[in-house]
Image 1 (tube, rainbow, N blue to C red):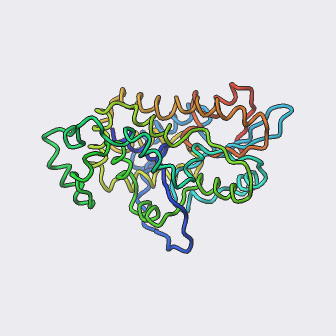
Image 2 (image 1 turned 60 degrees about the vertical axis):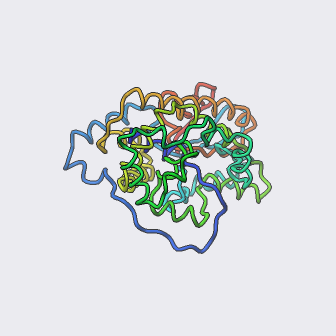
Image 3 (image 1 turned 90 degrees about the vertical axis):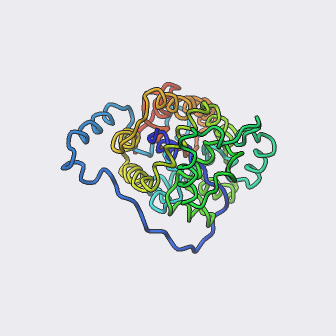
Length: 333
């Protein structure tokens, strides 16, 4: 289940609020768990390398999208974090963004301050229990005291969270100390920044989903799944620092196809194949198909800069391969 948490961090972590300039950078990072793996566990490194190599389109975060008779568009894979290391795009990607007529991100309404209050008002059941039960009532009795204690160590009172669904609390817990500090300052992640800058410049900004749809996808997973994930998140504790550092370094190297297997296998866990497959289908695969179907009409106009989470790119049912099935030529740059 810990690997579900880690994939969730990379794929579905959403950050609200507006940026504030001039803030001191947080420079405390975890350990890159890939470092030294060649000497400490060469067999595991070979296994990870082979799995990534067998994954279509596993290398690269910046792709050119072409079709005869249409102006080229570009696809850039992001990580939904405000870490300065992932906020700066390569020069070629920056130039493609600057020249794009239309900027497309996963959920364009992330830039609107009223989005979250509106969801809470119109669809509270996505985030809150409305059936008379509480978060505490769904926790295993033998774990409640321990979970309450561990949450208290992070400044969270379980009783105050009782109406909140477990996936929401998992989301709150599944971030590093630096990320929480940046979020508290209102710093943006890259997708938001790209959309807001394009809006200021008068360019067209589109979203492939809404925040409510993303919440609904997460909420559609079974409650017992989310309870197991919450418990794993609480137990995971500060190890999140190392896992996030590993994911960021693999991303910066362009090894997006190795992120999921690395996080799944390097950190000891008790993840069932069924849980992993369910998460993969609902949070990655199903959304990949939806995003490609909605992106296609925009790409037909040409001149699009499409920025989505990097883990959506690789795989047989990843966005790169699905766009090829729509008749586009994609080339890693």
